Image 1 (tube, rainbow, N blue to C red):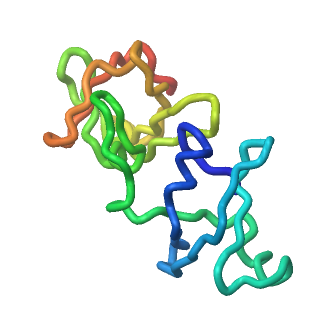
Image 2 (cartoon, rainbow, N blue to C red):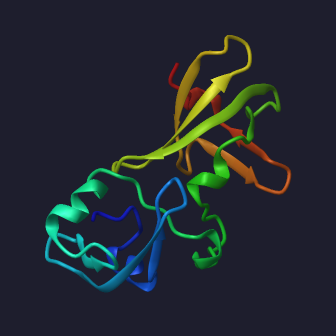
Length: 146
């Protein structure tokens, strides 16, 4: 498994994972190898053929098992659905998805004026403020990739 965490060792603190449909997977003796991949036995999957049904499946952690975040850190899931405003407080749209493929986080924003999707790098230059309580994010619209 290749975990999407700040470090693969963070992944080792979780003893169970879930599939999208809620199926619970219990990990046995997880370790991180030299390629930063998590190697583990999964309870109920006793051989390589049995575990092949999990190939390319996304695995999830129970929200309550996640560690608290430091200031100015966010779980990507929490950014989805935020109202987006520019530096002049003008409505831009809504965060459709927050995505990280390894080269940094990007926001897909559904634009209010056209309904099209635009992309914005999620970094200190392009983000002015994130207010999860108000469900609002303020951006520098010069960084918006339409």
